[in-house]
Image 1 (cartoon, helix red, strand yellow):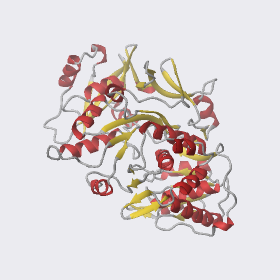
Image 2 (tube, rainbow, N blue to C red):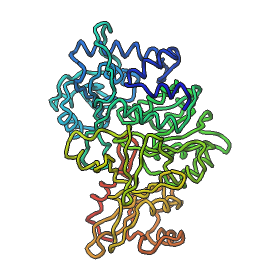
Image 3 (cartoon, helix red, strand yellow):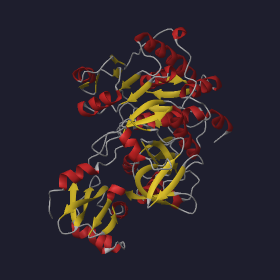
Image 4 (cartoon, rainbow, N blue to C red):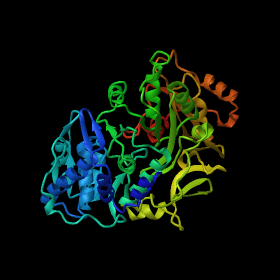
Length: 504
């Protein structure tokens, strides 16, 4: 991290970070969208006016404001306006509907709720009214506006809980995760330190800004003073024109994003790059098969660095561009000095400033932290001699067949290499004789000639050296694996629900 970024990383609050960056490079762009551009100076000035408008509406320091908005410049302005006021904000993914939104509004006790009106054919304002939300206001093209002279001083400390994020839905029940300005700054600093961007880079925010990755990425932009292109709706190949037109150098989001870029690359003639300016794909949020890393580097001619994070800890480890190819392919990178990682009976546990303060439900907080204050992640892994973290699966993802523990991830990584497999999820299903049986659910790549058979895949896995007791006993081939709408994580609980009653 360069000296300027290191100094900015010591900011007590997000608003202080915005103000300090605006003083350094007021005219440099920070957000780009379509033909619009917002500079660092404008971010500070316009967010203050929005904060004043919110203040006139009755929003005060500590007021809980929920917002369910798409990835737009206006959304970032509203969020930083709330940070300027010291309000408690609860971002809600825009694809969520009555059940999840109602739960978030009730649990957070939101006093105001910002919505986009009708967006992508769905009336969010009507849903908010149906749910009995308080203080509903639309914030899409227009935002509250006022005279900053009415504002109280900005918050002086960043250790109070001012953010309530919601777990992204790979389990059926969301949790309200409590964050502070300092925990978000620490997470973004970890990302920035690993990727080592420069002021000449152009990033991209192609995932929902309401995701924990939103502030994570914005902190990196503020630390290093470079812009990012925002995508309200991300789909390839439609978004490629914006990537090319803006000259994006850093892209990504999660494993699914890498695969989408790789698919577009494979449609082009040899030697032509899908995004000529692109030098780095980076992301996290879901496991990365080693074969996908090698394919991206080999076929796209760019570097791929992958990291490990979660709603509770926005950035834990991150691959660095100068790591070895083996480390980039097979590990999740290294943690920054401020992140303590402890492996207890195979489980990854965390302690550090980037770790959340707990959950809205005190009982969930009590069960999530051990006696020494380490967060129990539920992920299994180990640290290498070089300090890189290798994840081997989830505690809930260990399949116990006839008393033997089987790692779903080990089987998935091997199956990803098979040409008939585009993506795969391996799950354990209840079995009266074996306790659990191993089921592989396969999504085929586009243009696949025919469906693979269980015999074909188990024969392949035997050839790869997989032990016989780990071989799948059931195969399901689907058009598309169920995923969430944020970082496109596979929802294994839905697959277990779908196939638990089947016997093969």
